[in-house]
Length: 334
Image (cartoon, rainbow, N blue to C red):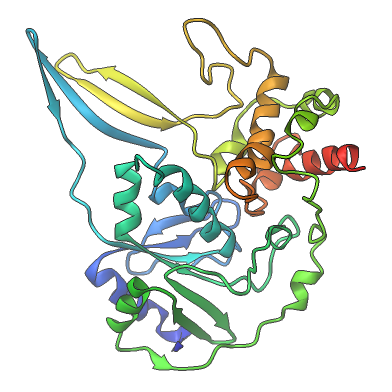
């Protein structure tokens, strides 16, 4: 275990950034984001960022490849930048768990090489939560916010930052920082998590065993009735992984982009034969069935949600996975 006085935090960030790109959560509550560190940039006082650290491994938009057509010849232009190491500091336990979920999708055979390269080059430094929001419910999903995972786990207690390496990558990082001293893990106020209003959420009614019962539930009609289909929940979610691929003709070449998509949109999975989910109800159901039923049915019961609470905060009509799970769970549990 290593420790560092918070008075030396800027020097600590400067040392990290000297050898690689460093991202820290910066900005005010509601707009905080993982931002490339520069001298003078301060760590946000907000609990969490508006969008998750997923963006750094699976960006919202990326240019995959270009094509140049000359007569009947097609030239494939590999344009991805050379991989560079980077560090993300201040990732919360919920977002760190989301990487496990994304890994099972993007690193499954055949692996997504764009995502894989970023994961191999990224070092994750987590930060324990001491004052969670009332919208947090990660503990209901088996996540301990006071003991986050990552390559390096971090805790802030009083005026000191404590760091513990969990992987070889984490150990190598800490060895490059001579300003760190030996220390012992601090004691955190665990009871604060017991006071969260959503700590007792019951997920036992979900999973793949009763898939058709949930799928055919009449409750979906009332749940989906007020949904705007705006997709805000999907864009702030750290575990959503849907994307579309678009080709753009510049006049001299074709650029192929990958961009986030949302199952809440009317053109999601639109095909020449039509839209397989033509109603908002069906699209609404798809999102929550995937999180609560489809994903756990193929991943040993693990839910596609990490309890970060972003969808509770951002939905303009206050419809979220907690309300859906509560409504369906009460109905389906004998």
